[in-house]
Image (cartoon, one colour):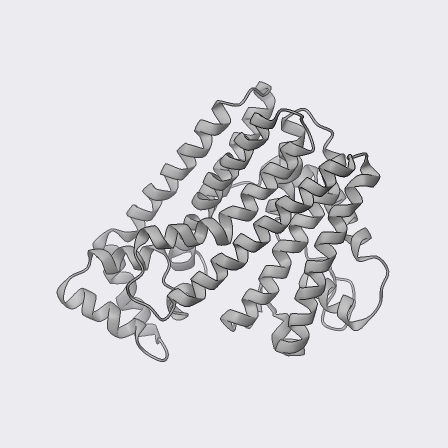
Length: 335
């Protein structure tokens, strides 16, 4: 599925804003952050790789423009959201013992856990400093303070979600509602924050700001469920099964399975390590129980709820169409 034009329109200026926030500091700590962002290689040499899709800052700027604002005013908020997201990824990699991200060694794998934590903490601090740059773009002090509060509240929810995610790894009593609450915090909170910040910086209409927040939360749930699907049935190897992650397909299967199928799942997820044969068995059980179809329908439900919020917003036809295109892409993407 082709990347929507919005992801290309803002990309250059998002990158410029991020580079400006990091500045010219040449210390090893800043080198680590630039490495994680995909700007340099392990030795500090510039690289051409584009890094991630910049989903969250794109949603922030698109929301600002959609409600009638000047999207460049929101660039500091977009940078702040991206830096906060990457702070969470650095820490997630440590907590999950992931050795690769985007086909490159993770920070902790190269520089050790302690220094990677430092880099993540520094990126969190830079996110806050990036947000303060809004005043230089013409935002009022009150609006800057509110934007900073929205970001911090999203970060706190994100941390709560990550706590729950880790705690669920050793439990087999996690129900579907508890899992959906977890991803609402871990993933949907920051996507909702991106929409809310963009709208806040583009309009004085408080009801529209809150509508965009709700739109983002619903989209965030659909986005994460699609991630859960790709983590098992995507183009790459089924990493979520190898890591014994209890994502939505597995939790659904544990709920629906009986007899030998349930015993098989419990046995595999109770092992110290999962081999290729175990992965195949889990996928067979998931397929038999219709876990993929269940997750697809669940993602579509949240997608439709997001579109209800979008359809109810008083926006130009062009803005609605572009938001719908981006929303559809994020839910139906295959990577």
